[in-house]
Image (cartoon, rainbow, N blue to C red; front, side, top):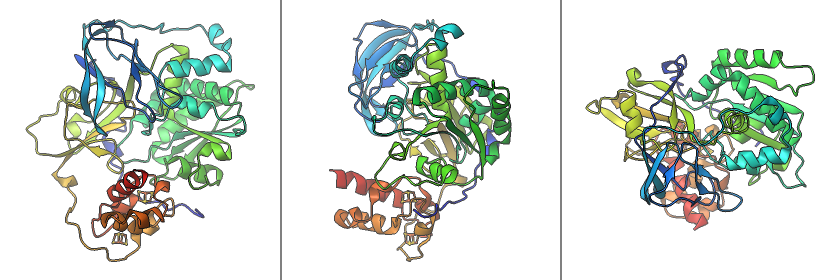
Length: 438
Ligand code: SF4
Ligand code: SF4
């Protein structure tokens, strides 16, 4: 990967970038999916009929790459059953009915003295117990990143505030409204990793957030670990870990490798905020900020929602009229998001937004023959040949597809976006990955 290719899709961020974070009402019924992170599904520790509080542990991590799960409301466990999942279709879930009280199971305040007395191990244990996973989308358990094998010395910590996906502004608003808390979270993580080189990368279409974070850094004490705040040119998919590393440090993660293989840890800003809450408030991860946007500006918001809230409840809260001419509802952004067919599917830890798209976002869907224009190759940020993988996958020639490194694909969607023949390259590449793995 000598240089990184980027594209410039319209960003549609004006719709919500000036909208302050609102707090949604907790749901009457929370659907808490056991598979909402990378790794093994969590294992229930509650039974039907049990009473739980907001923040109570309801399922625990099963193994190293897994995550704890907490109730996002107070109430009673009514069933544990298969439920609609916004990404994988169906997954086992703990369903909790609210008692309307929202009684909290955690402290909500810890003295500065108690926090400064925490050892690295204690901080890592609290992060693990709080069920924190990467909130930029991948939902990879954060503890794994903070606990690299002894042979892998971490030199740099990158805080990902790029938020390059069109429409989404939840990270932008969080950086603007919670700058101080984010910097406290950054210090915790830097201490755990023992790194001094800390960089916060934010795209220049969020100038107010850059200024806000910089002003907190400016006021830090002389002996504090000071991050460098870097304004990045706006381009897609700069928020991908490997692309951000290339932009900020001019280093390349080897094919099939991880950032920690070259001494780097990348953590999204919203994950950092969750770490701050886990340590300073002892609050488990049961809510997050998402963006509601798309073709209906009157419902657009940045909103703090409880994990497990059905999509329909959120859209009702935002005032969506279901009689409107809706073309598609997408969880996530338009480039990497997943179209939703069941509005009973809930918000999960990795949900960054819900887009309600109208007809003007309807793309020409008639698929044509590949004209060998090579635009997909020029657009690929990883230097792959998407046409070769995609077209081999289409013909079920997965052995050929596997020879073009499909597992290096970060599923950014740039190839599909630029293809003049409307070939759903990213879907075909995802299919190839599944088939080759199988
Ligand atoms: S989806 Fe994969 S193959 Fe397509 S441009 Fe992105 S990284 Fe490259
Ligand atoms: S962009 Fe589309 S038409 Fe052009 S080479 Fe790639 S797959 Fe073929």
